[in-house]
Image 1: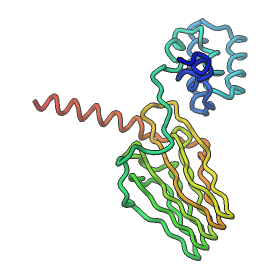
Image 2: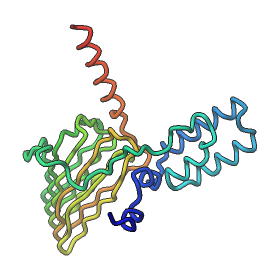
Image 3: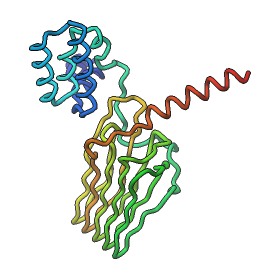
Image 4: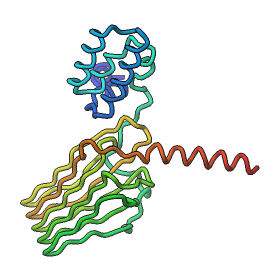
Amino acid sequence: MDLQKQAQQPDAGQRVTELRASDADRDRIADILRDALAEGRLTADEHAERVEGVLNAKTVGELEVFVRDLPAGRGRQASPGYTPVPPRPAAGAIPAEADANVVAVFSSAVRRGRWRAGRRLHAYAVFGSVEIDLSEAIFEYQQVVVKAVSVFGNVEIRVPENVSLRGTGGGVLGSFEVDTLDSVESDAPVVYVDGWAVLGNVEARPKRGKLVADILDRVQRKVDKGLRTHLDR
């Protein structure tokens, strides 16, 4: 075994603590600090100092420091079972046929608001623009593929900031940019953006302040279904 190589590779817990912190992460830590103040575990000055640190924290690991000595903070450290999101969905997990197509030819097309994302979406912009906004979409599946092709056009994709985002593609005299995003939620949806930009632009990034709430809803539906199955026996 190459011990030197093993030492250079960070463990799973370390990878989680290095993730960029979201506003939701900061809010959760701030709630713990508020409860600690109410319980008398922190003085007013200690609380104010830690809250200021939370607001300035950049990573999940930096946030954990402020609650490490509090009961509610124990067990919040990154789990060793964390598995990095693969760059591509599992073979056969996503059908080849699209659930929906959004096409703009010398025009513009927009898909936003409360809509069902499905498992595969195709977006084509030819001398036009396409906007795919998933920030309020309903995620019924954990893996969603967006195929984006831009020819002398523009495709913009926005996702909630608590999902994972991956991209595979390129540009030919164009720009293909996908901001890699990792969610700390093990059940969070993963959005894969594939495609090409030919003398055009494909861009995918999180929409700050938007969180997908259907992660918890989906878990609750599974629990309810399990209870109904058990009671029907």
